Structures are given as structure tokens and as C-alpha cells.
Image: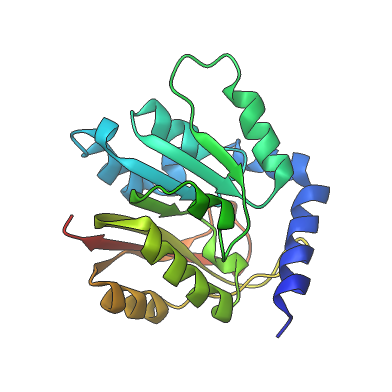
Length: 214
């Protein structure tokens, strides 16, 4: 297994070098198309202005902006400075309240924790597969400290081969079940074996919801 400094650095380098292409890909689809169940649940929230959302792995901000436009208070976090810079540029001149965007590294999320904020909702859309098993368990402990007692977490779990020079790791549903039991969450598998949105061969997704007093 590669060390943290090696595989995370390699992934960030791949995103920086191919930033324009990745941004074009992310922005080519509507936010709600990628995680329809998540957006259905968010639409059902009666008072979004009372809810804080952490969009971890926000990329150039597609989902963060969509959630902010719906009235949620959003913090978007990504390890790519190019993606965060794009998000900041898109914030200019907007009428709706803007998300807060941070360039921060998982699994420790030092800058995010320094905000001293707790979140009602955590959105992990196409993110967890960037971390190996050891670092995912570190992240779960960090997320536990960032969540309110009443909380909702939505994660998409990737299965399939690496692509485009990035290191990718399968995330088993059983791992999320363990996290749910430890944190006192109810778990629901919203989608299992969902086809890849961009048609990549051998890639599929499981969508998992964790709820606590929600």
C-alpha cells in the first residue's frame, strides 16, 4: 500500500494537471442528476436556512452552489487549489448567498476543523474512493467530531478500476455499516450497483444514507 504522502500527492497532481478537463466534466451535468435521492431529501427539508452542510470533495463547487441556492449554509472543501480557485471565481457577482470554500486536505481536515462549526448534513459525493482504508477510518473519526447530534450523511461509494492516473479505492458498504453502528446512525442503501454517470467501463456506484435523529 502506498504511503499517504505518495498516493494523495499523486492524486492532487493529477487533478491540478488536468484541472480544465475535470472542471468541464463536472460542470457538464446537473447536480441533481448525479445523486437524485440526496437532492430529493434536501428538497424535502422544510427549513434549509437553519441547516449547515459540509460538501467534502466539492470540486469546482457545482453541488455547493446548488445547495446554497436552495437556502442551505454551505462549506465546500476540496484538496485541489485549482478547483477552489474556480469556485471562488464563480462566486463573483452572484446574487444568492455564496458557500464558504476551503482548500483543505483529508483525512485530517485541519482548516475545516478550525472553523469550529458543526454540520447537520455531510455530502460525500464521489469522494471517499480517494482515500485508502486506513485514511478513511481517520476521516470517519474527524467527521464524527464535525457532525451535530441530529445529522444526515450521504455518500456515494465507487467500485471499479483506477483511471486517468489517479489512485482509487473501493469502499465496501460494510465499512459504512460499521461507521453507522459506532456513531448511532440508521443506515439505508439508496442505490446499489448504479451505473457510472459518465459511462466508464467497469465502474459502478453504491449510494448510502446515514441518519441520526433525522
